[in-house]
Amino acid sequence: MRGDYQQLVDEISAALGAPATLEDRDFGLIAFGAHEGEDDEVMDPVRTRSILQRRSSAAVRAWFEAFGIARATAPLRIPPDPAAGVFRGRICLPVRHGGVVHGYVWLLDDGHLTDLELGGAGTPPDPRMAQAMETAARIGALLADESRAGHELAEVLRELLTSPVSGRAAAAAALRDALRDTLRFTPGTPLTLVAVLPWDTAGTDTAPLPSLPGLLAACPLPTAPVGDPDRPGPGTAAALAGLVRLRQTGSPAPAHAAAEHLLRSPRAGGTPAAAGARGPRGAAGIGLATREPAELPASWRQALAAARAARAEPRLGPVAEWDGIGAYRLLTGLPDTAPDPAAGPLLAPAHAELARTAEAFLDCAGQAGRTAQRLGIHRQTLYYRLGRVEKLTGLDLDEGADRLLLHMALKAARL
Image (cartoon, rainbow, N blue to C red; front, side):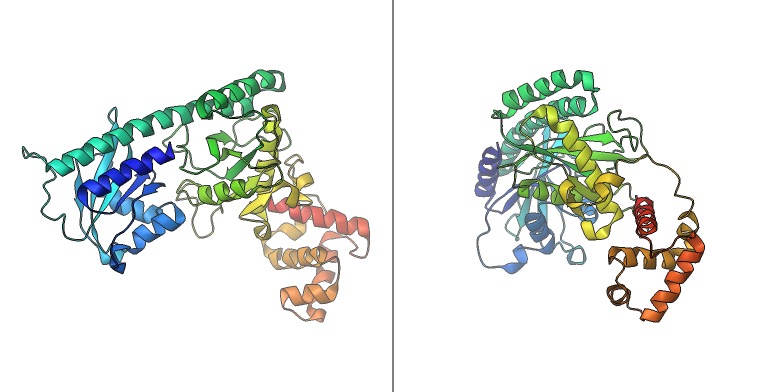
């Protein structure tokens, strides 16, 4: 399928003698044509970023959409704007099928397309442009077919991950059949799940499948009530579940690539209002690999737990694997309860520095020298703060059980 897109993009580039790029409607890169010549300005920052990161930024997307490309049914000219990183003008060919825009073909104009008639207002388009639009329509049909297949797979995946235990065998069989029929999937191929948390679902019921090798299906899901992972229900946030095919069970590189790609989506990290300077930070988690679709719900719980841990503990993220989150494997499975009474006073905003000191001390296994170095403070300052911690909590930091209680309470508070 991806080779088909590349061939069609190359056809448009050849017909018009201009470098062409194909992006989906969320500005994810699908295919791009080769550049001719040595003019560095042809590769303006916007196009370079699109190719290297396989996606344009939310600001770039908004800038181009302001020209009405999502509503256009005919080619549009986009003027250059060096301040926006757009050094060359562009012609945008909307890729539509069945009245729906599925993507865009972008042509970089180095000046030789300036007089090309695009059509409209009773004027017929240049024959080369008409040919390019016919090719864009073929791309639209392919994208529509792929979107349909992706949505069907997403719904089957959603059914498996939200089914009660009694219905999982049937849901797993349905996913296995759907993968085989849609993607000619070989049974026994290792699979894993990626969770991206939070995921903005505003205005869409199913997430469009990004153009990324190995990512088989993706669907947004409500986060399960903490401590009750077998009964997904209405949560305060949604997470994206991404089903990824691995080359082998012990090699999660494709899952990492998918997670990093998804985290660059405008939908990752919550709504724009929620993702302010002090708002939530998007993170991703990866579950253990399995060759059995029936075990994917367990992988999903692991991926979601790893995403929560990565979001709570910056040193783990932004992408964390389930088997690399340490004590958070236990903490993410605990019920969502109030803080332990002993630790409660320390968690008040007024004592944030003391809490940070105590957590660093416990992370460093109670070694004062390492802790002072990590915090950049004098040892005497550290001892003074730890004394205040003991008075606030009533705990003795020379006692292993008290240390364990405080350490777990501080980590749980992050979640």
